[in-house]
Image (tube, rainbow, N blue to C red; front, side):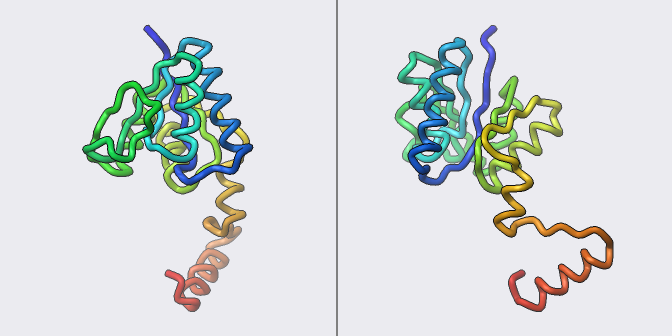
Length: 161
């Protein structure tokens, strides 16, 4: 049975170096004759990695959030139309033997958490998920309950939540 490697990462347009990394990863997965599984979209890590695998003769599965293929990468061989939106992240993770996570946002972080919860190995390529979110101000650290409440009060006072 062929192994399935799930590659997760940003769905946003990539800088050239990040796109090259994702394409190279896809080509290396194909060279091992593993199946590449991504979120299937025509942008970001999903598209770049799929193109790398496809160009190297690999098999690419895209787990799409929609019920159609309008936003699907043209580099996927098998499109699974879920109609599940971001809930399809569970399908991405549970269908993979190993998850490789490239830099991404909350969706990628949810896939990492789901993989860990399911006991799937996670390989973080080129980033530290927690540090990335802290740097973007998406995670606020607190050492005590009082500090946590103070941070929440500050957020409420700013009207940012």
